[in-house]
Length: 321
Image (tube, rainbow, N blue to C red; front, side):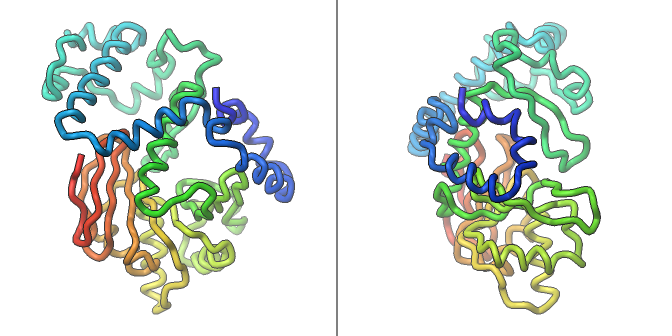
């Protein structure tokens, strides 16, 4: 199990410590090797993320289909919900030959996941090996789900970092984050919190209003972020404010990391203009099912974990895998 997963249950208590204590402990934590913080499987997943970018289209499709069969077969045999659901639909994972065969696989809806969460857990993974998490709730009620300790988060981190590297990301960079965090329930409360374990400044999404946008920009200028990691709508809100108030760019960013929301063409164009990233990459992630093209005024990179990526070109992005 990774150190990060072991410490996660204590995160709430850590956030209550004085800021100087958090900064000291977080600084020490960041100096630990990645394989300590994220687990021994992290290196394996990092190699897979790097190697996969060099695979041919045929090899990629073969790998995807093989892994899909493995996941579906496991679900059919060890996940109570899927055992019943597949049986009712007459869906047999072993008969899967092409992606088109997925048309026979029964679909899920949000309410089912909310109401029957534990039935989705694999019986091969004990309760002590599970880590409970929730979605950010950007589209409504947060959905709870389980991750596998020592596997799920290091795998996600390995692929994210590989993707971010295309935008110039390096571990330890100062990153401003606007992705659903809430710093306080008070309307006039603080808008940011420093995450010393990652050297990130977490900005509240709940206070991102027109009258408080100047505070966001002032605090970002003091923090001097090298990248902005945000929901596309939040990045666009900042960009529109700068444009509407006639201000020249106040942030010198090395890149813009977007995710968890669909990225429309106007969104791809506007943030790069007002936030001084017009000549550096934009990276957009949306699970494994997103689709999209590149912006017109920025160099765009699209990476859809675990393997599908788009490469860089000035007029947009082309799918390379």
